Amino acid sequence: MTEKSVLLIVGGGIAAYKALELVRLLRKAGIGVRPVLTAAGAEFVTPLSLAALAEAQVRSDLFSLTDEHQMGHIELSRAADLVVVVPATGDLMAKAANGLAGDLATTALLATDKPVLMAPAMNVRMWLHPATQRNLATLKADGVRFVGPDEGAMACGEFGPGRMAEPEAIFAAIVAMLAGEAAPSLTGRPLIGRRALVTAGPTLEPIDPVRFLSNRSSGKQGYAIAEALARLGAAVTLVSGPTALTAPPGVTRVNVETADEMLAACRAALPADIAVLVAAVADWKPAAAADRKLKKGADGPPALALTETPDILKTLSAPGPDRPRLVVGFAAETDDLEAHALAKLDRKGCDLIVANDVSGDVMGGAENAVALIRKNGIERWPRLPKAEVAARLARVFAESLIKGG
Ligand code: C5P
Image (cartoon, rainbow, N blue to C red; front, side, top):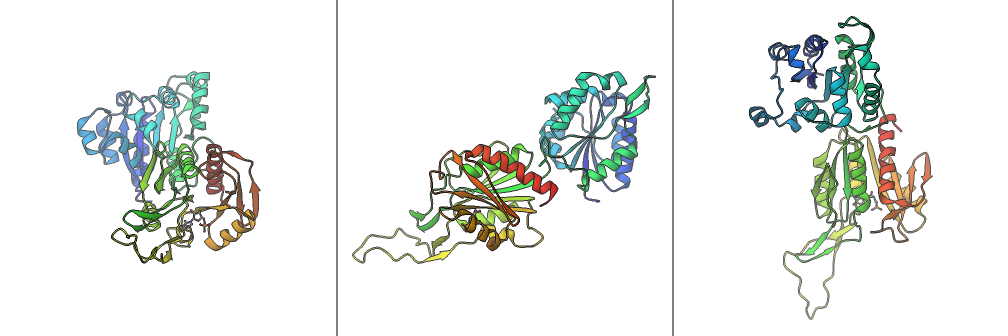
């Protein structure tokens, strides 16, 4: 795992000296370390010893022009594969649980899209205080993992839980998380560190510079799914045909018009863990788009020769190193929904089809009634608002990615 790296936040506690041993273990294993030292942490270990062991620059200052010039704090929070807090003091846990971001360490914790591991260390009464236990529960619900604390004699002379886990144990937890072997969590933001690709909206296939073939897709369901996946922590690329919608917060939107452009943008967004292809891609395009506006004339309307557009779902579902672990297609049907969707699952090679009945006012409407179709069964959902359908679907996708199946 030579190419992996961790952002190591060193907090202010006597256990900070153990962070140096941890850095040594990580470097010996070929894992890169980007250290962030809090002001309190600098009271216990020096930037010089941390930098020498990490073989990397130590950052402390949120408002350092030199550091920001080299790598902004947001980028810093995402550049490593894992964020580790050693020691996680009562103060750091409280700040992270409440989303405070007053310095570089807490800003990195709030801005990161990577998994976070904390090794708490504090006095036993501080650890057992309801406030800390509340913060621990909040952080766990947000998806933060913990190693330790251990029980034993403490530097302050008391005995009990609060001793930081030994560097070897923290190292083992880091290696397991980097290898994706840590027990998966479905609470909080289970898709943190995962990449998702969503297509949405119609495509627009030009006939000539002013005319095109398209369809009535509003993009609402696809946008809602992109938003729901981002809420679960995924880094989402939304490849969108022309719609009247604004990009959901935290989602990277790539605008396209034609099916060919959509396929190219999807390929560029790989690798991804999940691909959810919701776009209503035009099935046909004019065989050759005229480069000048077609004129009305005595010869009557032009004959429109059509060819097929690329099937993006089928292409991304094909086995290969770039195939996302979970590929989801949509089937908008007006009749015999389930039989058609089952056939589509087979034809396209995807893992799951979300079938929706578009015989009513679903296109452009606010609600959707869907059925989930897998090889081994069908699950029908009631009619629900599109945002609720999206939230439930995102949970199902996360679950099947984490548990498999
Ligand atoms: O074949 P049909 O259009 O009914 O299949 C619908 C599913 O396939 C949707 O998930 C849609 O996004 C996807 N699709 C695609 N590329 C196409 C046609 C459909 O990705 N050219």
